[in-house]
Every structure is written in structure tokens, then in C-alpha cells.
Length: 253
Image (cartoon, rainbow, N blue to C red; front, side, top):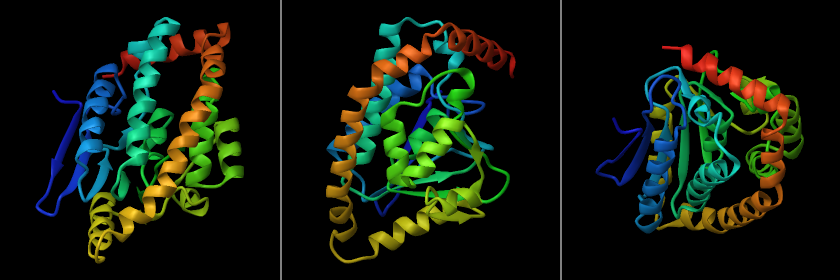
């Protein structure tokens, strides 16, 4: 089974759908696929890109802890590095990008959504946020910085430091969500078509330089905070909580 499905329509609007099973975990295999796909999209971008979580109730629950809970530091460096490399490419794509968030998005799931220019969140009982601190792990500065660009600095500090989750209405109020919709995929497609209806390449050119700045700062922040993040991952308290959560997730069907 492919963990990611990519298709382009006749208008050259690409849709990248997460398809990794229950909860759409970001597994090691998925990240390998994401690395390849984003490299290809970087070389040959569509007219617009939509990232979607599929038909389930979860956009993504984040990194697959059952796969990585007992990994050594060097393995995690490669794993997280693959993710941030792919995310940097998404940020930098030379076309408008939209995330259609169909359900809960937490931890690395919501971080993935921060790579796009715009976000459409499905209306309803959806929770979003960064619960890393609830298992004793810090949220890297590069994530905080990217979230601040997609919302505001105080919201980025509050929600990453406290681990509080927020709903679609709150997401709209802090500017994380650009649109709320009953059908997030249909709305994302409408936004993409609206942007493509404009003459020339205005939307793509307009986002390009702003995105270059974000990508550059995102990469630099990763260099500053990567080791500190890993230090927090390997504290005794965090290791115990990560193992417990991995075991609980492994029991779910």
C-alpha cells in the first residue's frame, strides 16, 4: 500500500493524499515517500498543490511512535531530518499550496499542515495542536517559528508551551485556518481554481519570495534547536511516556 497518493487533474492541480492507515501516522516509509515526491514536485511543480488527509476523521496523528520509540539518537536525526527536508521543499514550492484538513491534526500532523501557504479546516469537532509537552518533549524552535508565521507569535508560544488543543473556530481566530468549510477538499479545490483563474503567474510569484524567507529561517531555526529537542526526547521522563504511548498505540486496531 502506498502511504501517499499523488494525482494531478487536467488543470494541473496536484492532490497529495495521506494514506498510511488508521490515524494517518507519519511512518518511516511514509517519510521516504514524501522525500521522493517533494523532490519531484520541486523539479516539476504543479499549478497548485493540495495536501489532504483522505476520508477518515484524522488528518494525521503525527510521527508513528510504535516505529521509532526505541530508536537511537542518530536514527532519529535521520528520521526527523527527512521530515524537515520534505517540509522545507513544500514551503518553497513555486506554486500556491493549500492544506485541506479533514480531521484531527496533532504533533507532526499539524506541523505538516504548516508547510502550505493556506489551510482549509473542516468544520466540526476537530482538535488541533502540539501535545508534545504532555509526554515531556519540547517543541522545536523551528516548529514554533513556522507556526508563528502561520498564526501569530503569542499563539505559537501559548499552544506549543501549554500543549492545549484548539478547535476550528479558534484556529480561524488565530489565523492558522484561512477558511472553515463543511467539505474541506471541495473548498481547497475552489481556492486553488480561484488562484489559477488570475492572469499570468501573480499568485505564484507573490508567494515565492515570502516563502523563501520562511524556508531559510525554518532551516536556520532547526540548526539552533535540533539538539535541544533531542535532549528533551531522551530525558528519563520523556522516554517513559513515549514508550507508554507507543505501547497504547500498538494495541489500537
